[in-house]
Image 1: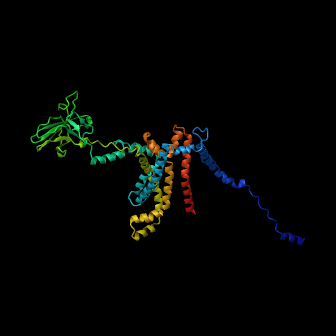
Image 2: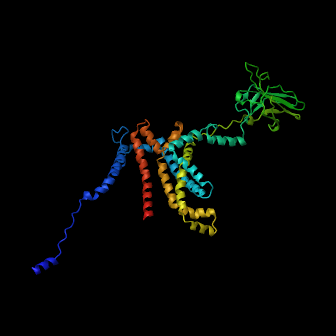
Image 3: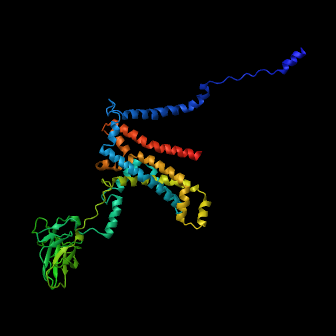
Length: 448
């Protein structure tokens, strides 16, 4: 009994391994969390992508496979070729411009007073959609009428300061005694000598162009050793005789009249009085002509057609920069705040100027952040859509169109070209894939 008990006591019982959970049990918790996301991924991304690729190989009605005919139409249709060109312009200009503006603004916010207000003003456009931004720029900035469009108003005010509009912009000669000169003015057809008078009657003058201080027109009195005349509105309510100064006809003050010799050279100039009269004194012997200078008929600034065929794409790009510069500034400013200040101070201590510090130290250290902004903007401009739709008028929409807008127009604007629309969607997807791959590789290198 003793030996037996000892032997039993010396032996260790065999350990029984716990039962292993099934594969389903091991991954059920993870699947419970990932399942809804995977379902949504398949329903909203995988299936639509596959269905769009298949649809791009079918006819517009979806009744037969046409294979790559829809893709061939992308590169042969004039409007779609224009869209490709415009997208190339967007990719070439916008990402670099947004990154550059963001960098400059981020650096400036560190050096100016009221930096918070400056950041707020630049970041505020991000609070509204691109479509709303487009409506703002089209309705307030790009209107051709200088009285409505802000840009044209500024240009008009500047132009008026150096080249003001004439007193009369639409006037025409009232008789055959006057003729239009080559420089845009109106001249008296007859040659004049000392003691003669000139009657310069004008018509087709809108009432609002008559100066407020205009009085009753007066017949000019001959001037000894000079030439006199009158410039008046040759129109009388109820009728009148052209070429004669009559009651109820107004003189036109402020008109510049020139006296020219036989060679056409200006000898003297005069400005009409409130009754339209003028006089040239101390005129020598010989024959002269009298003319109203072209400046009197200079047209007022009519505005730049920002949304015309030639400028509509640059105009939309400017509006987009207004919305995107704030985002770039905030991202770059966050990277700028994390830079080692001792490196910057060391560069300044070594004698580097502020521009050299910016170019040789700040920019290289910010290269990863600048790359993020640049790549993000490339993806953004490839799918730009709503701001083009909001700004470009129907008359020039084909000149400003881009691929994303054409994808919508072909499929959902009544054209019912669903095959081409699907092909455009796939084409855009293929353009974005290389950028995504580069972005993923960059993230892996940074996290390695």
